[in-house]
Length: 281
Image 1 (cartoon, helix red, strand yellow):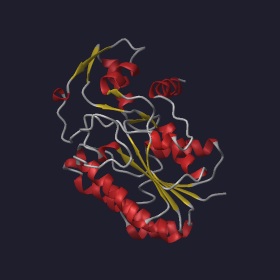
Image 2 (spheres, helix red, strand yellow):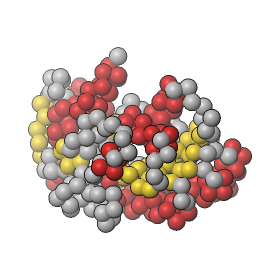
Image 3 (spheres, one colour):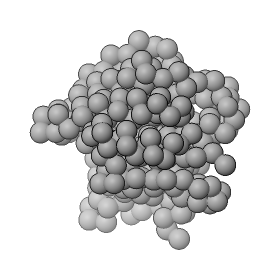
Image 4 (cartoon, helix red, strand yellow):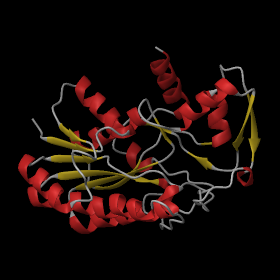
């Protein structure tokens, strides 16, 4: 039995990963930020040295993108860059494989086509810069790692765009959503399955990109989420919703490398339908 450790255990992805492993009756050790503060190097070394995991699923992250620009700029870097390095260095000491979740925000979103895994990175906000620093920390520290870039994550646990739209639809007759930012939605279930797939099938180490198939604008995503609700959805451009952090306009990442592993990726519409059924039950 492979010894597994999960960081960020109570987050959107960590919770989904635990649910998946529970369903498969696979044992693991899982810690939230209170139980394992990844920004504390001594604590990370002590915990990982004691448990000696063979695989570390590093789900801990700071994800408040706008706050990362100013009020939480230091925290963003401490968690996403320094914390990731701490985990990588501890993983190296015990010979563990590491799985790290990165983001489409490592790209600037000016590309018309899909971003390949080896496309030049150019993050334009603090969150993207810190997550890219996390990628580099892993690459400099470990040989046995999987970096998985993802985007537009939604799932049962935590805050996300789907829940926001459903909440707003209860109090409004009409919603406006931006239609000039494009990407790929990602169901946490699909992402968790891919994380374990790479490890369980001994796929080549390196960087991958994983979202659900097909791309859309936020407006198209919202329209699909609310298709059975009594609410109108109207498109607007990004200038209607100024944000502190720069948002990539076109961050559609190529899934080819992930598909080449043999992992079957469902389209985001099917993933969303299944997720909606799950939360309505």
